[in-house]
Length: 515
Image (cartoon, rainbow, N blue to C red):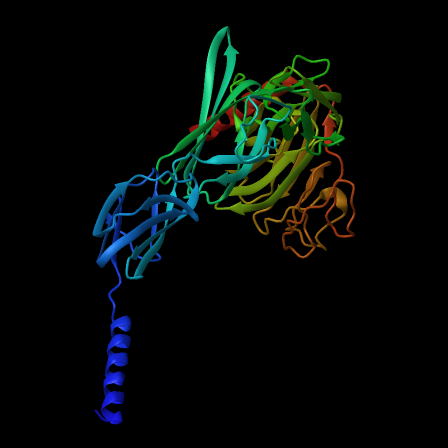
């Protein structure tokens, strides 16, 4: 045989041997986790230890099958056959991602492996509290807590491998009303709170039980039950809005706010030296009510002449009180401010408006009078009641003198029975109302109106026949023809005089109807 043939045969042998090594088959491997096929890099999330099923085969006998979990061998098989089937339930770490690695090796050196992860969530969530107390994750919170504030912030972080889906907080407040034991309950729920939470919970005075429940993806649930005692060692705070030091009105509005670190029970007021007192905020009992931590109040308070000492007292559910004192001086000796404006003739009658304010008056009336005869043409009682200093307004159309001036008379009777009078004269030609005592003669214009009496704002003629309805202060002087001063006081005028005036007006109206 030639050298060339020998070399060719050698090459074929080497090639054949080499080709056999390259194409040698590796074992086949399949794994299922609770009946679901696994693959390399796959992930499973379960709430219990899974059932693993392993199937392996090879052309050559299988030397070994090794199952490792978290790099620790948990199962080793030496079947010495070309196929193997094995099922078992490994013990996995809770709340951990467990790495599973299955390796198969045959007698020819072929190797096949598969690696995947199984997350086991078989433990209910934990909370590490940051507020209203501190606790470590995994440890139990305290069974009983004492606080001096009713509004508490509950905050903390969760520990759960799959995450908390629902957080619920229930508060039960135990209290007694009229000898009867009662429970006031409130509930809060947070969906998918994430890795942490923070929420405010209002607790009642005394005994409360807080239950905090967490539920994760696999319905693993944990409940913390904590008893809270709310003690109130601080009196409430009372804030009263600005009040007048002195007023001409017979009343004022008392307003403000009462607040407490726990809960307001009641707010009252009283006026020293009088029977005037009332409840501004009514008690609703001791049951937990977050709206009663701060409550507003507002009340109109009647005043008596002179100094009025008003006290506002707030009481909390623990019985502690705070009082704020305010002094308001009611000056009822001020002469009433009286005004007749816009007086003008209108189709055989006279139209006018006006007001009375300040002082303390019981009756207000308006009438029209014939200045030549003194006859009352028309009459109306505008106000008749308890003494007041609040603004009384009027707008009237009343009978007037034909083709001649008509006097509009405003009468005010104060709480002592003293009468004040304001008079405005209106003529058919111009309808202007001017103050006769002001010297506003109308510049020679005989059509100018006139006004007598004092103490009220009024309208005056301008000397040219045009009407002026500007008002001026009783103590002011703007340099114009309008004049204001104090009203005319008729001493001794009382209830009897008023009745005579009413009867006279009624007789005049009857006579006019007969005509």
